[in-house]
Structure formats: C-alpha cells, structure tokens
Length: 288
Image 1 (cartoon, one colour):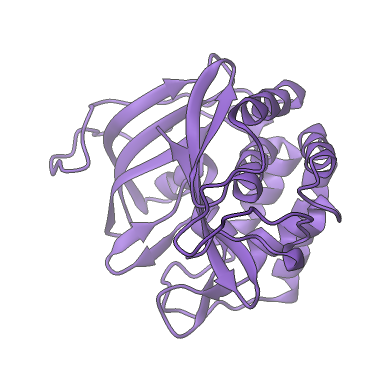
Image 2: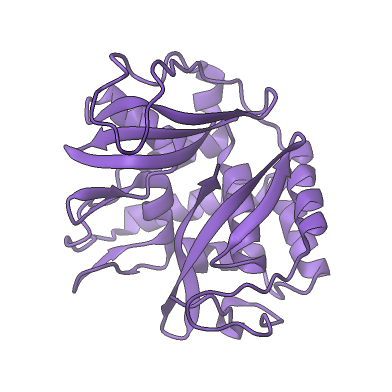
C-alpha cells in the first residue's frame, strides 16, 4: 500500500518524501492534530452514552470466553434517533461480509449514502473539519466530495471481485481468510450482538474519554469467525469518528496519527489503498 495522496483526491499538496510502504510525512504537526481533534470534539453535539458490560479482561491470545453477556447494555432512544446515527444504521445492511462476494450496489443504496453524507455535512463537526483542511491547503474542493471518494469508492480486497470499501471495512466489517477484518464501529457491533451474530469474548483495554465516549479494545467472534484484537469507539457520533479518521488519512496516512479528545491522548492508525491513480481508505481505527 502506498500513502501518497494525489490531486485526484482533491489534495493541493503531496506529502514530500512519500514512498511505497507508507508515508511518514505529516501535513499537520502533532500540536495541530491535537488542537484540531479537540476542536472537533468541542463543536460535536455528542450523544447520550450507551451502557457497557465489559466483564472479563482478556488478551488476543486467549481462548476462554470471559464474557457471558453482550458488551452492550441499554442505548438511549435519543441516541439512536440522532439523524446521523439513524442514517448510518440504514447503511449497515448494504454489504456482503465475504470479501470474495461481489457487492450489489443499488440505486436505493446510493441514495442512502447520499443522505448520510448530506447529513454529515450539516454538522458543525464536518464544517469545522472542512474549514481547517482548506486553511491548511490539504483539500481544495468540497469535503463532501472527498468523503464520497475516500470512504465509498468500491474496490477489490484480496479477491477478483469488487467487494469492499473503506466505509464497509471500518464501520461494518468484513470476513477475509477465515477471520474478521475491520468492524471498528460501535453501532454495527451492537446491531450484530442484538441479532445474535456477534459473540463478545472480553476486553483487552479501555480508555474513558471523560464522559464523551470510550475506546475499547476487544476480542470477539462475528459470523463464526474470530477477531482476536479489535478496537472501537463507543458512544461517539458518526460525524466525529469519520472526521477524525478523515483528518488523519489526509494529513498523516499509513501512520500512527496523534490525536487528543478531552485531554486523553491516543493514536489513530490509517491505511491507504492505491486505486486507479488515487488513494482511498483501506482501514482506520483507534490505536490504544
């Protein structure tokens, strides 16, 4: 994979020194990334927090089930009724889990994507991100177009069929080579638990964002396939989560990107995929 960002992705500047295998050059400094992430959190409306039942502490090498009950307890109705949360929910059933299965991309699904992107761009979070990226000459066009390109462009992932996208990998999850790939979003984790398709096995690490959400590293089985280690944001709005990933992907791709939320410092890791002359998101997740 290559971390170089190009003009086709609406970037005005290319990170000097980018090279195959991943860029280590950042278009924003650590201080700027900290300031931006805290500003995004400040303007975010947030959601009422779900309750978690973490249960037993485990490790990626463990085999015992240390959680007899689901990770998610109750989720306030107001949280699920939030526009961006509700519209993201409508996207979660649009994808084939197996990376060897071709995606069927209907007009109804395209419309759901557009509604979700329109709602994202109405939020103060995405408007703040767009202003910052333009001020730093990281994008020249609309952020909405960039989001559509990097998150929803479909591509092949380990097979001969177009079967994946950044959004599907990060927010929904995929099955590849007998294991779970991606699935870093709390909404789909909760949905799959409720439907009986995901078995939570215990947590590895937990970071509390002081009432603004949590990051939890977990072990689980989804659709009978294991995920020994996976990290997810919990109780974070779709706009904030996607804004953080997008900022890191554009400013510091294929790297550990330093961010700060409510004075808690951690990293976001992004990976890019080179596709027909542009870079799109291969993966993104909180690295704790």
